[in-house]
Length: 148
Image: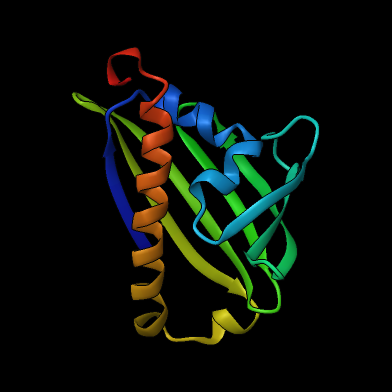
């Protein structure tokens, strides 16, 4: 399992607000190219973001589904990018004196990516997830009036 973390100069509620906006997904997830639709009721468990990954014209349409969501605390999603496989991603938000400590954990759970040894997959996930957290932090911090 790959784990990355970042101190975000915003509250856990600010971070959760970005995570709860399915239309913002392509703005912070590395590799997501566009959002095709977001289920009504997102981010309730069982709802999905229908997205495309890749670079035009080589796009793959797929879906990310919420497994758990506790506003200001935690989000767990199942991400799919077939034919590579599927993964489970967890975001945990903890109040910090300077804002929010945001931890992201990801593991491959299905398909060919799940067959790769962690020693090969984790460095790539860690690099990508650090950039994902950077983008997510920028969006959350933009909600704080003093950060504008």
